[in-house]
Image (cartoon, rainbow, N blue to C red):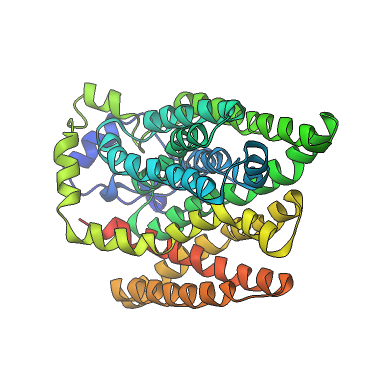
Amino acid sequence: DDDDDEAAPSNPRTLIRRQSSKFATYALKVDPNQGDRAAEIKLCNFSRPHMRAFHFAWWCYHVAFLMWFAISPLLGEVQKSLDLTTEQIWTSSITAVSSTIIMRFILGPFCDKYGPRLPMGVVLMMSAIPTGMIGLVNTATGLAVIRFFIGVGGSTFVMAQYWTTRMFTKEWAGTANATVGGWGNLGGGVTQILVGSILFPLLKNAYGGGDEGATKAWRTACVVPSAIGIITAICVVKFTDDSPTGNYSKMKKTNVMADVSMAKSFRHGALDVNTWLMFVQYACCFGVEITMNNAAALYFREAFGLSTESAAAVASIFGWMNLFARGTGGFISDKANARRGMNGRLWWQTICLLLEGFLVIVFAYCSSLGGAIAVLVFFSIFVQAAEGSSYGIVPYIN
């Protein structure tokens, strides 16, 4: 019985939206009073619009991480090949992050105006092209500049979170957003294995080994994540929807949705003090994660004398915790909200941040490889859980 799956619309605007919706029925239970957002998550379902958007959101963000940090496990080889200093390598890592920060500020209003689908495809393509060209780099400046443009891909996070918030009710926001964010960030661990431990040694052997083979290998390895990015960029535009009722462009043409001023949208968010409080809180967890994604392989190589392939494999452990830890953080946030409201969400995030801070200090003083790996696992778990707890709070900000 359809009445058991969907609550009756409570106002005329909901009726108008349903009548003009692209979809007559949905595969998931929805709440008409929250814009036909889904009131459940079925991970093995890929139907449009809700679960198709869910899976494309995490996959696009995952691919963005594949490209964003594809060169990270090979930075030791790049440094040796181009005769760069450690400071020059770190400069390139800083530029890779700085472009993401800039784009994340810009893309929020773009999503309000155009929906998440088109910006997602455009940004993935913008990141994929320089990723495939990184092998042409010959100087420190060139490395910093091209990593700046690759880093644009990290801003796909904005579209991923906007998309799931648009598709799922507030009661499911923490779980949905955290799972999408976690599986997306998992790309930071996968790329360490894919590029550092699989593609690099294969290509190195194919090129005859030695220093010359290693140089040719790092110059060509990033073509693979670049190709994946281009294919994904095309598919996300062609096979997904902006919202439960269809794409923004058509909804505006049929007057179901009013046009939005990007300047007004940005101003509205920027003037809310809660936005900046979340900015600081998220910097304390996600900022730590992208630092680890950039530096972990190089750190294990230098501190414990590991090979490029082995250091990449160990460093990937940090990213692999995203498989469950971030989603768990969001799930616990939702449960805490059910018991104690917003205070429950805030207390859970505070606990995660405190444990994360304690463990990063312990990690810095680990002198054995085994001890460092053990602490890395738990350190990563609480970094990801803190991020997941953030996603349960964001939908409640004005």
